[in-house]
Length: 142
Image (cartoon, rainbow, N blue to C red; front, side, top):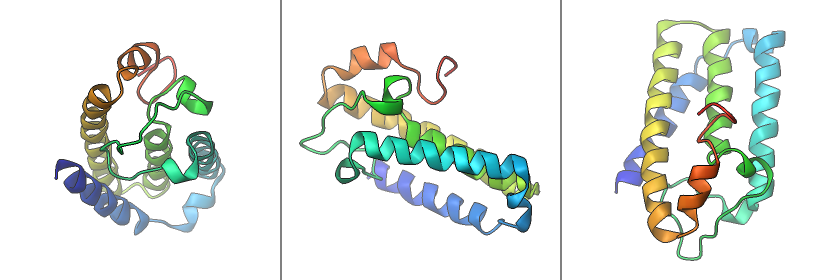
């Protein structure tokens, strides 16, 4: 149930951010950030396998640990890509709505990834060692 609530909150905040899109998103910095985020998202999906991608944080019964592609360095590259993408929208149209929505998204995804990590650690014994070798969202940082 917690996972569903987090996904609904995540999608609602992303909807608010998408409503803030303006032509300013096509300026060089936001556009570069968007391209980078889409590349990271595509790389993560391709590395995991499109059929294994899940929006909910709960692992499936046949879940395996992916350590290919960006997963070699970070545990949540799709969250990283989403945060970067939405940050580019927020900074290209800096309003209190956009900034607040991005901060809410950051909070929701942080809660969601911590919840997901607890579930994965229980479901996949190798996850604990993987967690110790990798960062959550940004290589070499966090």
